[in-house]
Amino acid sequence: MAPAAAKIGYLRAWMLVLPVDVVALLTPVPFNFTHVRGLTVMALLAILLLASGGLYRSRLHLSILDEAPVIVGRFLIAAAVVAFIAALRHESFTNFDSLLRAAAIMLALLLVGRSLTMWTIMIGRRRRIVGHATILVGSGPVAADLAQVLARYPQYGLRVVGFVDNPHRSDRVVEGLAHLGDLNHLSAAMANTKADVLIVADPDITETRFAGLLREAMTTTYDVLVVPRMHEFQTQTGRPDHIGAIPVMRIRPPQLSGWRWALKRSIDVLVSALALIVLSPVLAVCALAVRIEGGPGVLFRQHRVGRHGKLFEVLKFRSMRPANETESQTTWSVANDSRVGPVGRFLRRTSLDELPQLWNILRGDMTLVGPRPERPHFVELFSAEHTLYAWRHRVPAGLTGLAQVSGLRGDTPIADRARFDNYYIENWSLWLDFKIVIRTIREVLVGGGR
Image (tube, rainbow, N blue to C red; front, top):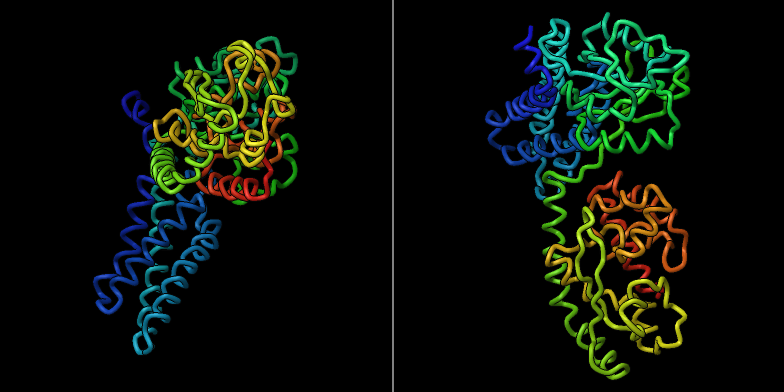
């Protein structure tokens, strides 16, 4: 069992499901020469829609009856898109029925393939060929129930290796499992046991304290499952899952690496380069106006804290001259300072003073969307006062961010900004970036700056 157990954690459901889906969807294509392109596009679009719906993520409770409605719905969307394009491009509908027949065959093969892959995964789990090393977080009644169910029913694919919790807990009822330490040793326990699944049941700790520990654990673990506090009642989620009769919800770790993050960086480079070219007349006018109002020294340079606490020099159009470097680094707000002239006030209100940061983005110091960068003095100050503030530096600083388009600019509570910035990080997606950019453009057009 030892050699098999060593390989258990590396197997993922999508490694089997995705290739079978691709084969099922593409099988009818060679037999329909008239619609080769249409059916190929339909298959690829169906795969993308299934992936976006989370249908390649591992589930605990496997049932084709649970999956079928979502699979059918997303495939029909792909088929409708292709059929609509075909109807627009062709005046004759002579072969339209053959396209629909081929689509029906694709759907049937897709459902059959899914049934076979689910059956295969279930067999592998029951025979303990596949499974994931799992740590229970908690040692109360809920954790004890989960431990018993998972030991009794291996088809959930989880192999409990121990639990972490307060060793002096008064209502501890978990028995027969290794105590891997208290909650402060969660990350160490995961590393020592090579666990890639956490199930948060009923830990003896405050929610605020545990949230910080969980954030650390989520940087390395593969899957985090949480039992709702009111687990006796139905949980309203898109794709509910459960262990026995106990509902569980998945917490998605922030996706701060991989192809999506590489695509974000590519977009940063492309957009910042094009913006510098297209907006060069605007940049020139702003620079000239600043020069006329305040004399030499058009650009303002200042050290700010970026990703992982690394310092970089941010660029802005100068809107005023600080008395000295100490004032520049330690004065919080200058919005109402008498030294801010009409040009500077206009640049700040319209956010045009931030345009030189496009060069920071092109260099890789910043990104288009992310938490706004702050000076080292205030980072140290705010980090001491607000426990979540330092977590903002998990990503590069941004030209614009969720906090700014939500009205948190200037003299607004730092705790609120930190909450919005961390919400952005933990729910990051390219679509969220797009929405923030659109809202930023609206803010600039209506003069919603400082």
